Image (cartoon, rainbow, N blue to C red; front, side, top):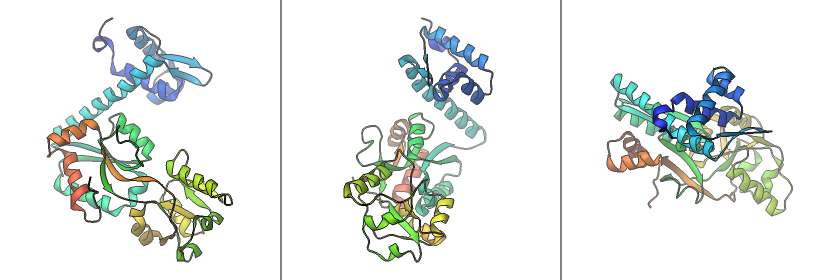
Length: 317
């Protein structure tokens, strides 16, 4: 078999990845902004190079074979390296010192300490181009696995990821419900059953926090939960909670920010949740470089995250 490096091109890899993600030649063509025949031709070329079928046609769409999944997995890493190389070359050509991509768990967007850390990093490392992406942990970890971000700041389920990721603990944090000023629940203390008569805003399933709360309610044998709105904390949802009796679940670390902005107060009710601390998760490649080169961009950002902000208490390990 002819070595891949002599025949396989980036456009081939892009086609395979999009067909796997979209499950359809036409949808992949739409994303890539080419014709369906061009996608079909490129896929046929890849299968000819590999010497095997990469996709099966099923009633639910095109599904990658074992060989197809392997190429998709490595393809993400290849395209990630190409994008990173492009960004680094662009940075060097423009006189910058490099590029750092940070993924942030969306509810932490109100965390004042995180904003202060980023501001301090920019002041000390102005020649490093910084990109920040906010999304769910599921999406961010997928981007981390695909080498599309350098570090993710967020939360893992308790005990999850200790083998798969190099995790740096930032601080302990427990989600808590908040409600508008004047809500009868904020005077507390109250129990979980007292919360069930009000609408809740919870992350959409699948979500470990929501699963644990729903299980706790069922296990307690109390009345069913009232209306649930599936959403992450956002300006719209926080504003809704500030104007109604709706309860919204937020990270404990943003309580001061949501009170200052929306006048939402914590509901004094202990929640039966088993969650990990807030953490920084670098790519394993970046982690190895950080250990060897303390001047690496992540090392500088980590310094501000772990040491320079008094409100971020780094756990001793």
